[in-house]
Image 1 (cartoon, helix red, strand yellow):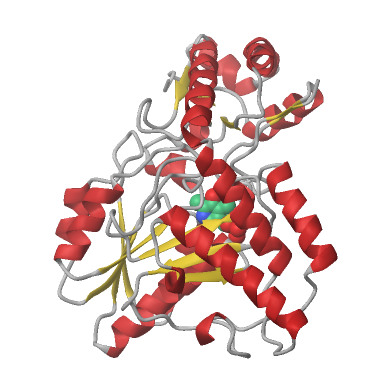
Image 2 (cartoon, rainbow, N blue to C red):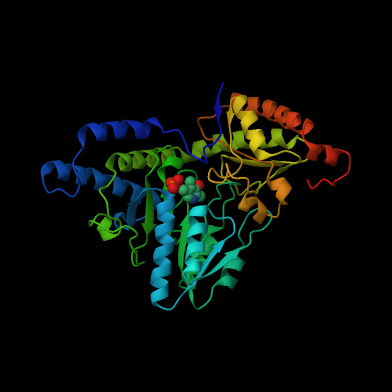
Length: 395
Ligand SMILES: *Cc1c(COP(=O)(O)O)cnc(C)c1O
């Protein structure tokens, strides 16, 4: 048995996407910008996918911009709002300490370019307080960007309240919804969201394709110069097979969202109950306001990387945080932001499941993970000090 429990890093593509992509690659090879009928056929297919995605999100098709994925969409949304803000003398940007690096690194760069950035703290459960957002907004605030759901600890943020505050104060509100789209219900118009990023490979679509939704009337600056694709806001020949694959995967995910969330949520809760039995362990994130497929634990006295390697050998693909930070020895900025000490943040495990996972797999993980944790603790000098009482337990 090999269990894939790293769906927050990426998902295995579903048949819905693979089937339409294969057909598209065989049959629709034209460039949508060409005037001949082969090109116009491609333009029609592109338009249909744009309309389908807009409908699922509760947007207008004019508000959908295709990008190379979530990172590009985040970069473009933030840079664009910063640039247009600066033109009006607004050089203050607000975000949180638990954002994805696509957001945090863009904000860091902008800070070096002369913008002022406020990164809000989150509560111990990983949730942003809307009143903190309201208090941070100033006359010169150009943008508030808060992620919809966190990629490490799965917390769902109070997006409606934050969006309402921003609309009232006339500040642009962007949300990185890469972990949320296809997993929880979203309607951008009803929820007063001005900009939203999504990425197809997080909901069983292809990698390297995403969307930036931008509400009508919100100006958008292009990162990539060239042709007039995406109404001049994103140059480059459209990746049509990926775009139709994304549309199909999104429609499929949304059509089965309720049943999937119910099934996956029940598996998640069983897994959480099982792993909570491990002594000196801690569930990170909120127990209720959480993505259906996210489980994130810290185990005292062990190191995340060794845990991952041993789990892989036992047939479990997991992660120690975000895919981008594993491989570096820095503890997760998200776990530090919810108040965990460095040594505890190092021993974290993220299991992200979806509807492809089975109850049998959950049972296997509930048996195998405590055994691996035990094994590592037995050879850990840190654990020895903890059990001898030389250093105090933190969890
Ligand atoms: C995966 C992810 C991204 C990056 O998306 P890519 O399509 O891989 O560039 C951005 N934000 C969050 C929250 C993510 O989980």
